[in-house]
Length: 250
Image (tube, rainbow, N blue to C red):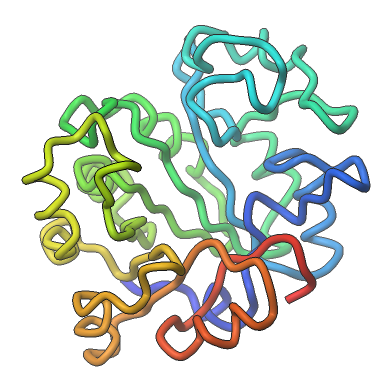
């Protein structure tokens, strides 16, 4: 199992080709359509609804993106379909809706957000919903998560789908719910082989990591997030095989 070449050959639009100045919010249908029109691969994020459907939405809490408070998990997919995303005129989509919209026109990089709360073992529901939504989907797609237990579960539920780990420097201030010793362990990228990952998507600000360098030197595919300028992209490509970008034309 390998990462599709299509996810290595063109820059990947982070949460779709979003632009609030143009009324196109992140992870919206409009952002998906804009990326398809421009020919970019698309990165999207998944949370889970109360009725255990895969929802295309980045944050655990709804306030930043909708103005309404509370976790996505407390709303049904039907409820979410009626909640407008701030900055545009659309509501929160499900993964099946996005898959129907993309329909293989461009590749998809799908990140499943941690549902355990601490990158732990409380997994299964979102992975199941994702695998079910992807049944019969023939376009290029790869799956990833910060939580290695989720990636292992994806290996069980969707063994033929390329999967990877979302990674970073795991700094204390960014991961307050996780013990320091676990952060130190995660920083060394120990789970790649155990979960059968065929790539990582690493924080652009930590591409100087010796652990990333070791994988890069071995020819292991390295993606990175999130690049916000052409200058930053040029620097990132000294290590990364491809970039996930926003805020400029890559």
